[in-house]
Length: 139
Ligand code: AMP
Ligand code: ZN
Image (cartoon, rainbow, N blue to C red):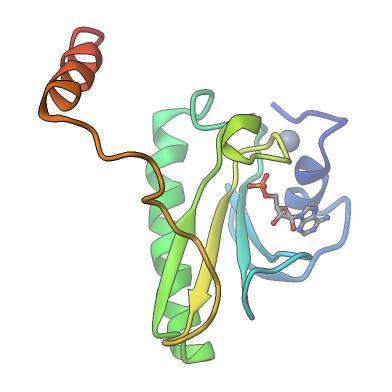
């Protein structure tokens, strides 16, 4: 399941060097080369999945456990006050490298990093119900 043209496949499998924080049979966690904060890390599965929709359930479960473990260790090591776990899927959502990855972003109280939601117009009650019904009819 490796994709020979994928840079994150090469990094995850050690063919391209990286600053590796953690590695096991299924994952490598590296420092992001364009970090949002000090210690910004990326969790990469060693197998190639373009995004969340391609990810198998077992890898999805393991990924969140590794992210949880890393955030705990990094919190103590870096003195982080909080964390963002960010995971982009598709260009519309800002994904630039099409190999599933989770951003593990340490945060400090009062840092000026912006990762905000909330600029979309507030939906009416009718719109909320219509959205819910549309999603539920596909479940
Ligand atoms: P995304 O926008 O979610 O696809 O995030 C891709 C991330 O990968 C960005 O934060 C980049 O800074 C990071 N990145 C791209 N190439 C490399 C690389 N060779 N080593 C480490 N991080 C990288
Ligand atoms: Zn890949």
